[in-house]
Length: 392
Image (cartoon, rainbow, N blue to C red; front, side, top):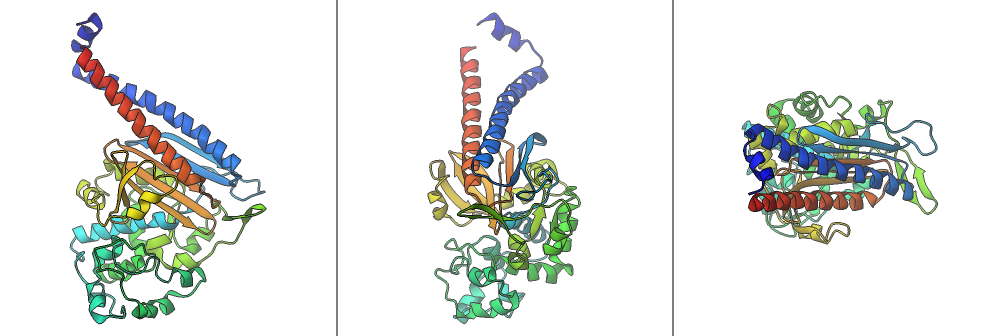
């Protein structure tokens, strides 16, 4: 045994823990610095107008950075409080709120949707009864993927879309196959409102935004447009990114796509989901949300992620990935002019979020690269520590 090894053994336990933690954080800081360089370089290369990202280590912000302008050609920079649309990342809030209410016995996952929404009909009356509340949040209704999103895209009104479901025949029995939805996912809203006597937006505000001090987060187009420090949407055209108007269509489905937030807000959301705000998000709640549900094999073919994904499922408003052997809780969002991505590793206690005000696939490339770097680095650290112990 070397003198160095002997001196380690004589140190107090707290010192040993501190040394190991510091080593890991030091290596992790290097990944964060590298990611910042990649983020800025890739957004510049792809001419994305603006963006922001944050990297979390347990309950601390390791790196937060912003890039570019709130509006192409404008003078105002994106900063840490600039509000973006979260698009489908909104589902993570809906899944969390609904799970809270299930834990409080306001309703149950196995209750039929028609108990709360009798106007919901499918072509087969028996099939109508088989769609349960858990199927909505777990994306396993069995309906054709993205049912009637085409009408929503054209700004068709929700009250006129709902009766059209009576034309649909499920492609599988509810609970047995993956079926991504926006409209049907948001059928959880009337259930929540009936059982609480409050609006969905107010509940998210009171149960999540306020206690987590997500001070710039909101729901709905009116709140978004009333925010001075907001990012404008940009779509990709042959001549580059073009600023467009904020579309109201997907704001109709608040649980699926209604949330607005800054990167500072998402840092707080990640910290809570990593278990650091148990008064708001209890550990039993998080365990429930992170439990894999229906398998989502289509995700395994994602162009930027397929090299790393071993398996994929949908939980409760979150995706659950097996990313190179590590459990990753994930969701992305894309709505006219904005893209977003949020992910965290429950075991490694690491989280990362990105927001862009231009439609670009670069966000997926950056996300996959980041998580590959983190997991590879953590594996190397573990190997070094194991080798050191064996050497001693």
